[in-house]
View (tube, rainbow, N blue to C red):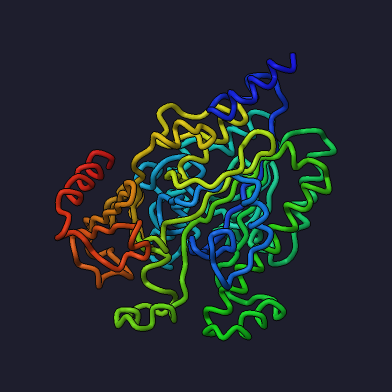
Length: 441
């Protein structure tokens, strides 16, 4: 009997389902950072940012260092994580329908269109999981999202939007999440936690004890504040992970980590004259298809089932749904484009990943290409960006209007910060990746 169980566990690690083997389903915790560059962790080699709790998580995780998100913007990025689809498939391409006008009300038809696509949260709830939402959640209330419990009310009459009351998590303690875990343990039910705190996102107002550390190191003020926010976020992750240990449930809990999109302080790009067009953050970060906008480490920790290791295989936010389905046995739609990250053969066999960038503050419901900015592809060491200007130029609001080149080609192995465009030097690579983008999109 013991050998049979061992075989089934190994089968799960290769893409099977423990749920199907009548083994207790794991609890799930999804940790989502908000506006953090892929480099800005201790376990990713940053020499200044301190993230000891995530570093310890990395030590017991499958760490996919070359992870990517579907969009460099929080709302479409999160929507792709939930559905396993790209923004032009689920329809959420930006943060707003009409700039900052009547935002909560105009969200309603977009939200209705989005919920035509099933997501892993509703699948978990319908299969018997208790599910909790905290932090960022754009698509209505936690109940709209299919959670059994949560913090976000989503009521447009009360200004409910993009998380509302849920954005208190982390910044104002962890009790809603830890109380939920305590309840699920008491009821002996498997649970899922969506922990998406408004961290290290602006406002960058970290505790003084953390800010003092980074200011003493001589960083520019905006950089020091951001670094301190990264450590504050890490502190809250430590509280969450520590609670799993105290409840003695860490061994049967899968923890997934990803960031919604990147970010970099404006002062880090001060030498670029185009930076004057946009003062909120560095141009080649949030909202852009460059690495500081779309790349993120992705981690999967599941003691006894996932071998801790570092991997250079390509991973993607659309892989969350297939991975969760494989671990829990929940149903997912056929033909989702992502892979099960537990499946080593699938990881090894993937050669390319893709994504899209749209205008940040406006979109046309049902017409995703209206404000399309870029399509991109990463293949091995190569990355191609293909530039677009949308169909409706009257609605086209884009912080990257300075970038008029039709394509950009980079070798990420020797140029990870995308300084040298190799389009002219390697036209055959450019054409191959352009054809791949066309076939994908």
